[in-house]
Length: 131
Image (cartoon, rainbow, N blue to C red; front, side, top):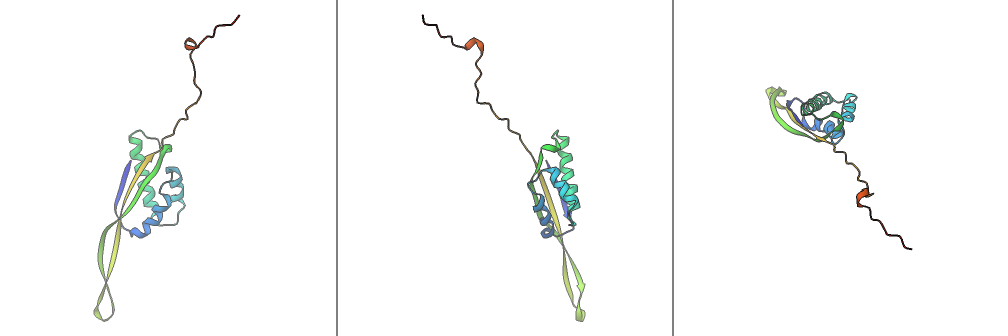
């Protein structure tokens, strides 16, 4: 399932640090790590992750089977602001934003096949006895 957050007001460079930390992990493990992370981007990414989990539940997929397949952080718009500087000049301040896209995948548990062949009683061969 997908979810996205647009124009999040933090630079993509800082958000990518948090995104790289949880990419590829199971949903439960990622939520636990985001709860105790000392980064500002932790809370919005956690909310985005829970939104994607909610979307998956609407389609009948259980949370225990989900993992973070893709978490992409792209550059959003840059707001240009001016800050007064010495001698009547001004310096430009760039206020950067981020676009976040999350894609959850479902783990498929493979069932091990048995190598033993079962032969039904009707197909068993009988060997005639020798006298």
